[in-house]
Length: 299
Ligand SMILES: [Zn+2]
Image (cartoon, rainbow, N blue to C red; front, side, top):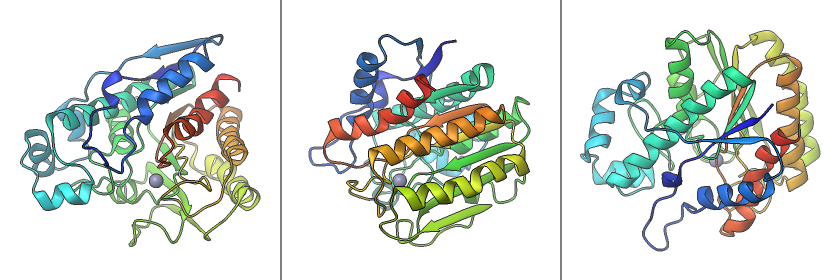
């Protein structure tokens, strides 16, 4: 059985010098995985841009069309963290197309992984915190609308709360949101999801894994989802610039392994996205993002 990994070269675009978003990480992650997984059965899939009609499953036409056509106000651009450009629109649509493709592959094969995605702060009608289109929400809504699945569980282990996803699915009981994050972190005002766990600042590997083990298998048994979309954000790492937790590489590996194993035991397909990670050291950061792909390849 080969493992499907999803990537597009245009996940990485040029940003102005000094921009705080580590845009190069997607390219470096792909290079790293090419080398590291050269001897394993991996299939690389290249996504297409997500169609406007697909994005409309989640986003309001006003917000979407302003973004697609470059009418986003300066204030809204500041809130998003990115200056508008054609290349930015293209990359965001490719990233969302990538998560859609990851979901399709996961439903066919049991497990598939994007090398981007996890833009969980994007709401239906506005962008926030480097998140312009909510790829997780679009993929979940699209899979349901197409009749591929009925119930979806979103397991969001990025260090920040998945507020956009929670808001989008607040009135959709068939999409259950679970977010475990640092309570002191962005966004300052959380949007309650179905299951939120707020961790104390500096929570380390042991306490983190104990909290996860307590809840995940129970949640899977209760929800019985047809699909799990997993946000494997690595901004939980102690060295991350924007995280408030203290996980190590080994802790992240144990976390990812636990999620994948519990889902496999329940025969639940998993589509994983990489989520946040903001170390200035791009090599170290790409290495950290590669943990989920490496873990999946040798599961
Ligand atoms: Zn994050």
